[in-house]
Amino acid sequence: MIPTDLQQAYNEHCQIRLTQYQAAMQAAGRQWLIVDSGGLQTRFLDDTTYPFRLNPYSARLAPLQSFPESLMIIGHGEQPALLLYQPEDYWHAVAGLDCPAIEQRFTVKTFSQIERLLQEAKAITGGQAVAYLGERPQRFDHAQPNPTLLLAYLDFQQAVKTGYEITCIRRANQIAAKGHQAVAETCRTTTSELALHLKYLEAIDASDDTLPYDNIIAGNQHAAILHYTLRNDEPQSMNSLLIDAGATYLGYCSDISRTYGNQPGLFADLIAQLDTLQTALCDSIKPGVVYTEYHHQASLGIAELLVDNNIITCSKSQAKEQQLAGVFFPHGLGHLLGVQVHDRGGHQADTRGTPNPPPEKYPHLRFTRTLATDQVFTIEPGIYFIDQLLKKAHSDGRGKHFNWALIETLKPFGGIRIEDNVRVTEQGSENLTRPAF
Ligand code: GLY
Ligand code: MN
Ligand code: MN
Image 1 (cartoon, rainbow, N blue to C red):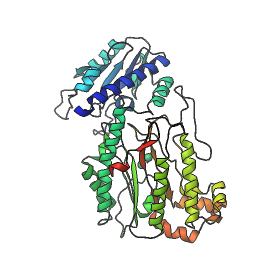
Image 2 (cartoon, protein in one colour):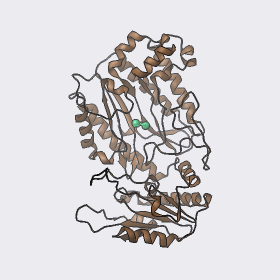
Image 3 (cartoon, helix red, strand yellow):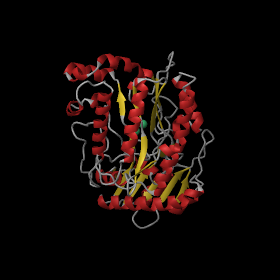
Image 4 (cartoon, rainbow, N blue to C red):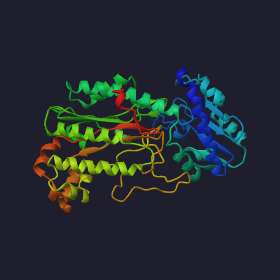
């Protein structure tokens, strides 16, 4: 499961993370911690289940994506236990754990009955200051469910990735890049959003269930819908294509966006200029700077770009002062990335969970922390022509500075997003995405 070349790195990773889990337990006054993989959820009045999503707090300790119903039991002294559910089942496939690296870090026990597995978890943890992480706390009435302090501690710490995690995210980028390249090639010959989605899956050799989030494959004006996931259109011609698609490697995610135009002209120029702005932002990343500052720089850069291209008609300083870029760039510059595409902890000031909310003028910003070495996050500026936001700007007066005739010609292209995954290094940054292309 964990390939040979990563076993040593996993071992070190697991040591680091387990030590953090124990420190989090200490902070929350807990002797034991039960981490629940989660279970398969049945659809309403149905006998089919939703795809399984591993509890992220399990995923950071081991890639147990094929092991619903398993539990990790972490104490303070002894080796942690991994209780695996291995039913005797001829209806469904049951994954086997064949992973020396995990077996080295956990005492693995297998159970064919859930009741026995739960009994074992209760027997190990006793009634002593137990915490439970997961969505089924009713199974463990002796445990404190999801203690706020414990979660805050883990959420804050996990922003800084281990060497193993960085390798996994780098590989997740390499996989996704293959899909992106296949789509970039194929969109010259088909306008079907579904065909492009299927091409992506074929190129990365994966099914939908393994994706970190639903692929966004948005042709033409669909690119103005930030999270467009319908993929049911096949327009007469494709003026533009926005693809926002990732992949997973041992549970770690990539999150990449590219935008293509089909002809030279203003839209293609905007793509090129936003690309220049985006790469400059990525290159300027360094530890010690507050991420909000990069969002601010992105907003200013987009304001300038819109004035330079005569989409906004007032002066650059006026455009910046009045926050006019926000009409065209209505989301945050990026977010933490890990086993969740939007990793938690982006709005925390410390391990105690002191809030660090975004400033009022950037309410959608998901990440407001000071950058530290080995944090991994996205840089994803965008420019969109969104009717709803343009109408609002028109009615509240901001629109008097807009070149409406030009905007009308751009609406059929929808919008642009360019998104890379970036790691902070001691001196600056490493772009995990660009070398994969
Ligand atoms: N793919 C979702 C995002 O970029 O945040
Ligand atoms: Mn993203
Ligand atoms: Mn994305």
